[in-house]
Image (cartoon, rainbow, N blue to C red; front, side, top):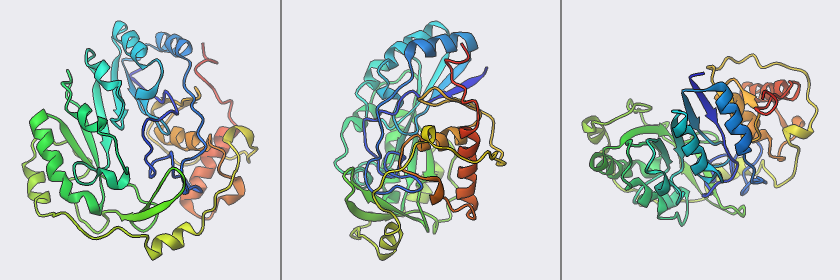
Length: 328
């Protein structure tokens, strides 16, 4: 086995409202009802010994890998077995400094930098900046998520990447509809809306940059936007479709016996509940559905996007739901 994507835990050290902690198909108002769960370390070790992967990628949907209670033990275990480790993180964990003895490639997913991080993550902790300045054995990568309000901050990120020898990738920030997203507190208070980059014709997305000449030419023209962030009329009309309610978890619902006909790239994956998947997309959908804030009759199956998600959930609900423990 070449590589396994492993979601170790649902625990997160930083609330980011536009990620799955606070936003899914039918949920917008505040932090979702996420229990802190994680993979059993003893079971995971047995599974990795049996499969002998060359590499594992630690990648969380609801949580952050660095919040796994046995993360340092896992790193030592993989080091003894010569398993290469990649870690995708939000960068806020104080445990990151304790990993510097290991040759790990970190990927930091960030939503802003000096001038703009607080817009998506109000009162963001300075730990992220401290961690980006650590002396890593293997130089990390940054995935910088682009929105209209943080384009001018790309130059600041480039300066830091040049100084530290960090690879930079630029990605469009996720939006929920018509190039818009909402910033909502854990308690469900709608603060303001942010805009995506659909109006921009960027050719520099998704590429790993270590030479920043091209990016500097593109982003030096962007200046700090002092426009006041507001609760837009469009945002209001989107949000009025959502209410705070309860629903079901995929583990507690009966669904039609339907298979997913969408083809995804094959990838061995393990969710934080130990379920096995053959693609990142399916693991992401099912991991979101663990949370009891949706109902089958909410789905608009005439909408291709929602229909595909519904079909993935149906396929999983009617499967054997194999886990790493069941294969030992």
